[in-house]
Length: 461
Ligand code: 4AD
Ligand code: MG
Image (cartoon, rainbow, N blue to C red; front, top):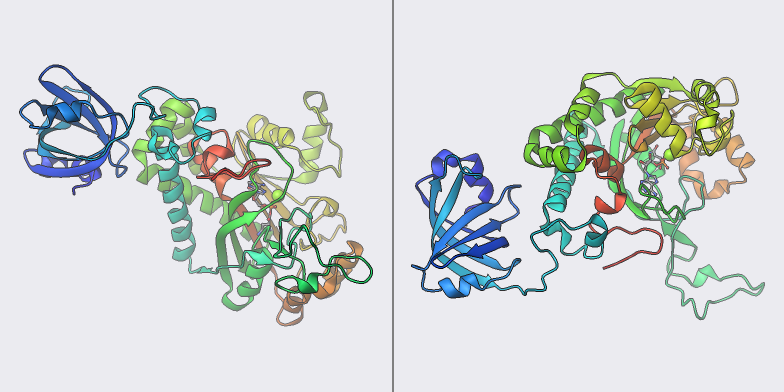
């Protein structure tokens, strides 16, 4: 079979030639002696128009086909100058592989994203989702190539873990215990010694702590995999299962961290604009007008950088605009993040040096004793897309911080060992991959950039 992509990218070679393509019918219509099939095979964002006539012995059967049917068609590619499509196939044979029925949910009309969410197994057959998942695939490849070109080692960190990397307590517990008949210890507590791992474990919220250990062997590493959060946030940018890219660099400080994050985002944007022109043109026209110009602007300009304290100064002067009023010490809400990036900077911005009390235990304490060397990258339309920091590399300060937070140091001995054996300044960040895909495509809901989204109260298929 010839990919429809080849017909478009090597048009000169194929015009006048006989080829065979296989795909699914997007639309079909016929008049008495001639019919038209719009066929998509998933290899290219544009379909192939196939013209078939009653010279074919199975003309009647073809004409009865419904949208969604699978066929294999053989015929000659002919140029159609002036028509909507540059060429079409004049079919000499149309083999019916798999029929479809008239109640096929994807008819040739606009369906709402809400409706399409109810059929996650069929929606990749629509233009919008074909474009989203192509961009998602290409963006993932771009991220790997960015890090591989820079000699970062890809580490596969575990998904089942005994620790809570972010210390937020938003974990899905993993257990083989029978919840209807939980074994109890003498004092009535759950007896985890009877559980599979002999102790409570959970799905990872971040690969960071594990990947940090590998940074101390390879200098520059990254992990890119699924992470899980039992966050009770029913928003358009929170999912219970999402993918995260987490690089970790030794001999690097917060500035190096931001520089790498900025270079990575620009690389991915460029890569996707270059490798998915048809899909990006579609998003630009139908999903988010002006998207391509905006992304080109992002690539061509430096990101903003501002400290948390400076940001609070700006925001508190505009408190009348917010539902949630800010003051120094509070965490930034989406409305504040979006104000900073959409109204103040009008481009992506790093907010650095947050109060230590609103950030994770592992972040490096600044000399002021109040803030930590953290950096969040905020982008227009979404808000936080990256969270990162320089890590606390001083054993004593880290232990003190863990004590303050009442953490069980025994569970984190491996992590403390890094500060004991060859400690060095180091930094890393986490890019939420779904938010990155939303940013690249202009899609407004995280449920529409994951194949089978898991959100509060929703785990279909
Ligand atoms: O800011 P977060 O919690 O940082 C970490 O997990 C660090 N351990 C990363 C690191 O330094 N290695 O999460 C990082 C990013 C966020 O900026 C956001 O883009 C995304 O992960 N994220 C989510 N995306 C979708 N749904 C959720 N529930 C998310 N929670 C975080
Ligand atoms: Mg964060």
